Amino acid sequence: MSSFQGPALRKALDGISGILVTPFDAADQLAPGPLQPVVDRAVDAGVHVLVANGNTSEFYGLEAAEAERMVHVAAECVRGRVPLLGGVGRSVHEARALAQASARAGADALMVHQPPDPFVAPRGVVDYVKRIAEAGDGLPLVLYLRNDNIGLKTIEALCRLPQVMGVKWASPTPMVLAEAIRRTADLGLAWVGGLAEVWAPPLYAVGARGFTSGLINVLPQRSVAIYNALEAADYPLAMRLIAEMLPFEDLRAQENNGTNVTVVKSVLRLMGNDCGATRPPSAWPLSDAAQADLQKLLGGWKLLA
Image: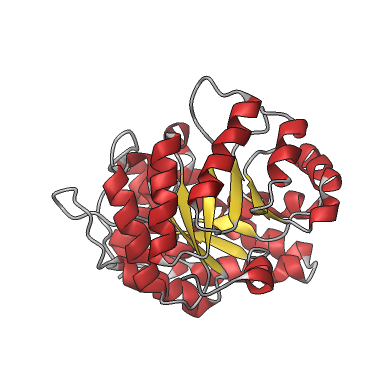
């Protein structure tokens, strides 16, 4: 049974959604232990929502049974202190099974990954989300949209499904987001910036609130400081804080964005909170040059163990 429901969950979705890493051991097997300090840091810093089986969790690198286990592990680590979203996706049957597992684990809502299938029909996406909703034991849904290719008509249809409570908008198209918000203004949905801290200001400007973050795994207090500045409409402060962490995001964007999780896990290792390597096709390890840049950055942030 979830701990956060209704207005409490809806309010939390306007905050930071921290996407948790998935720890592996030296044999590339799940190693849940190192996740506890990651979760504790985030909760203690004031991160509003935590997400298991998101992209920073290497969702597409996990077997179905591993994803099911990790939502249970995350729930055990969170212990009801903040809302937990369980990411679901891939084939519709896998997504339904993971939705059921997430409900059993005590997740407060489901985050539905946008299908990466090369043959995606707009009406097929609506059917996909409906079938996940049917399996989710009444849990609210948060749509994760990485692009807006399905069109505004379909996006509105998805938003009007009764189980949908929010949307994580991960497309760098603020004006399309503004129109989607306008078309669904009567629903009171949470519209969350899905492109992390660096895109939060322009998405805030058109009506999004809060943002997703992988930074929370290593430096959650910086994410919270950026959030607080945005909520106070102190955009100069928000931009200064974002500029100071831009080198971190630039390193994550290397190799066609293939070092996104690599950088996070490299930082965790250097901090003494080793969560293992990333799995292919993610890059591992960092190049020598990127590793040197990262260590220099962390020295400035005083994060080295």
